[in-house]
Image (cartoon, rainbow, N blue to C red; front, side):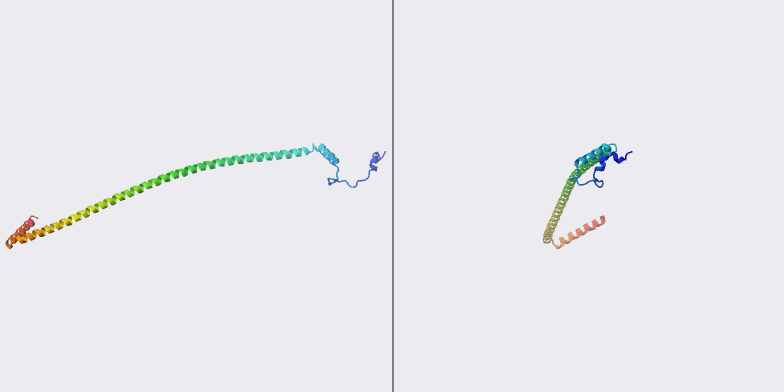
Length: 188
């Protein structure tokens, strides 16, 4: 039997390349060797999952994108709903503000009318007081004039009586007046 190494005569003639490893210098590596190695890896690694791994990565990425889109849509719908609620609240607040504004204006008008009515009432009262004061002063002046006229008439009458009366007539008038007073006293 021959030695196994004898069956591969060409192996013995190859110079040894040193240790086996990867050459990381891109310019020093042979692109053909790399393409062959990658081709072998892809061909034999197909079932092992080169494509499965890439497919799983793409599926996971696709699922994350769909999930992100779904979340974004939900957030967008929530934002739209909140925007509509905010618009409704704004409309309600604007209507409330308009109502307060209208009520405020009507309240101001009401207060203004009340103030005007109060002023008119006060003016009427002052006019009445003025008229009463004028009537009172007129009556007082009339009474004073009457009193003076009466006093002057009385003085004139007394002066006339004193000049026309003598003592005897004077005593008789006094006696008659005393008699009238006595009768009035008895009647009471």
